[in-house]
Each structure stands twice: as structure tokens, then as C-alpha cells.
Length: 268
Image 1 (cartoon, rainbow, N blue to C red):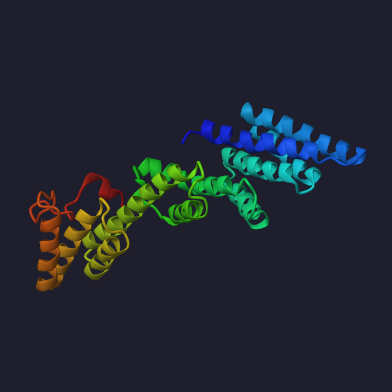
Image 2 (cartoon, rainbow, N blue to C red):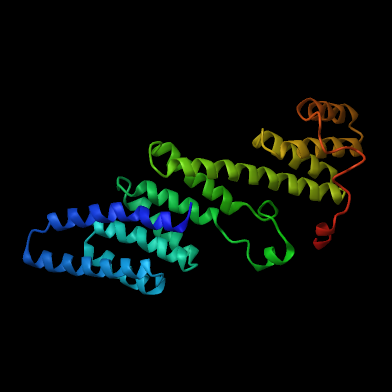
């Protein structure tokens, strides 16, 4: 999903908003106030289109107060959250969306609000330390991924026919795989450090909570390795049997153990 699609997706609701607001004017004073809000909003949209996010944010923050809680105010909140996100103000963007979702449970833009909230957490940057260390997504704390998953799930449950739902479901699948990878990453870390019970527990967590993911193969192998070193031969044999049944051509074996040192691991 490209930023340009996200931006264009706002335009339909924006157009409907402007039509409803214009049709609903009842007095000269109201016309003047709403006209002022519409002018501010139009200017903000131009700033957003040109990437002038800071200027757009200032205008959008003023629109909400002048629009009087109507559809234009709702649209400005969604645009404001998007502009905050593009300005790398993640906390402000999420706070704006949370407020929107709480105050506008029947808004025509609610599905987009849920989608954008999921997208912001989904795209959280690894940061410079992750880039320097070659850190993968599965090797960092996964709280943002879990929050992203919950937003996408709420979207797909409440709005199964939303145009954003198909993409949200794809991202949910990706997140599940990443969370399973994270559990295996931690299990691998514990195994290499000799924390065998902890390694077995995290491998079991990956298998139980995130079954049928690409991480399942390594999770089974780590489980067998940990049980072997703990002297739990029956459990070891059970894990090996399941591994052989499901992955007859597994790349993991006792001669190519996951506990072998690799160059990237020395970063720990």
C-alpha cells in the first residue's frame, strides 16, 4: 500500500463532507463560519498534496474548531492524523486517531481510521541501532506489531466489505509470521545461552500461539534440542517425530545446529 493511495483514499470522504456541510448551512453567520473552515481545509489539502506537512497541520488543527463537530471536522481529524504520521509524529497521530474512534463510532471514515492506526504501527521504523546492527523485524520488541494486528482485526471484523480490509488481512498474516519469528528468535537466544527451559518454553509458545507459520520448523528443532540437553528423551523424540512428519526435508539437523555461532550473533 503506497502513501499515494492512502492520500487519495481520503478524497472521496472529503468531497462528500464538503457537499453535506455546504447543503446544511442555515444562516449567514453559519455560512461565514463554515466558509472559513472550508477555506482553511482547502488550503490544508493543497499543503498536504505538496508535502508541506507542518503547514497543513497548523491549518487542520484550526479547521476542527471552526467546523463545529460536523463531517468536515471529522475529515480534518483524519487528515491531521495522516499529516502527523508523515511528519514522524507517531504519538500525536495515534492520539488523534484514538480520539476520533472514541468520539465518532458511526462515522463514515471509521474504517479508514482503524486502517490508518494499524498502518502507523505496522510501519514503525527499526531505528538507527537496528539498521547498524542489521536487526530484523523479528528481533525487536513486537508491541507495535501486536497493536497493529488488533487495529487491522477490528477493521476486518467490523467492516468486512471495506476497501481497506483486503490489505489489512494481508498485513495481519505478515504480522503473525513476524510474531512467530520473534518467539523463535528468543528461543534461539536462550538455547545458545544454555537457558534450556526458557528456550523450550518460547519454542512451545511459537508452536501453540502461532501454528502453521514458517517459523514452525525451527521451533520444533529448538524444542527437540532443548529437551535433548535437558535429558527429556521422550519429549525430545516426540518433537523430532513431529518435525520429521511435517518437514521431511528439514534443513535443521544435529550436524547443522541452530546453536552454532554466526557472525551476526556476535553483536549480542
